[in-house]
Length: 377
Image 1: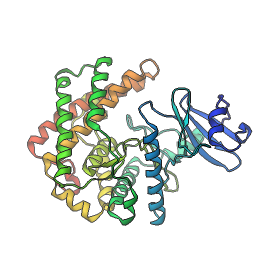
Image 2: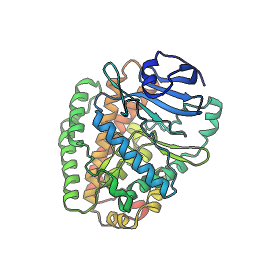
Image 3: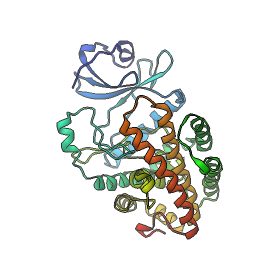
Image 4: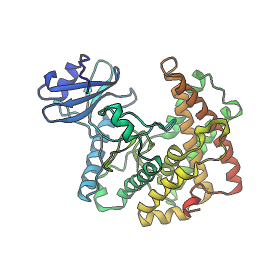
């Protein structure tokens, strides 16, 4: 691994008891924001990162406690899952206060992942390109099936006794998060949403209201969800060990929303752009759903069977709208710093997402279920 010394002595010194850079190998992953740190004495890897300005100290403390509990439960059940556990600083805090941002040190989660925008294999931070070529031969279909299994196991945690230690007050205000980002990004992006633009806000508002109604009526129990489960946040090693990263949106909420959002991220056809002819790629989506329903708790499986199609469709609209906002966000954040091929993929995704939203409205009228491929329509 390339050894670099980007002047991080103070930050590293806040987390390591002996901040001797000769004992650390530091590799830049993203200049000024993310660094891979290897403790040469212990031969362990960590990810040193600068947190988003929206992340608070309270949120980081909640995430640390949540991941520790998940890790404990999975270990007791002998279900291996690598997690980006937050490390404590010398002040016993899961962060270090930098000049204007919070820095964190997390356990590194190994394994291959895929860029969710174009589904290309991501380069492993710890491996050479030669080994990466071999790892990328891992079939995406198998990757999808295993991801579905791990999402189900996460949802299952809420049905076992040990889960009482989980903080069920964890919530994310998706209505506010979605609408705020939508308003900001619609002013910055050069991409025209046409007739859909004035409709997105009420679409999101109605979908979140539907989600809250389902929760109040207890048609679908609130469970621990990841909130942003996509091919870039799921990792799988050559040996078959799984890992999940980026738990910023984890909370107790609708498992149906988590499933639909993940289904689009792993198997959505929106990446084809204007030529998108269906909402889902059959092979990818069937693999993901097969893994999920093979591992899901029997009680939760029964609640899925009882869900109404219009409930499912409302949450699917919210999921697609969220992904569209991410793409608008990308265009404004990385304008001038991204590769031409990246922008071309983002444009295709924007067009495909809009077309998917239009198709979703038509298929909702036709009464088709998104998860019918596994017999749960």
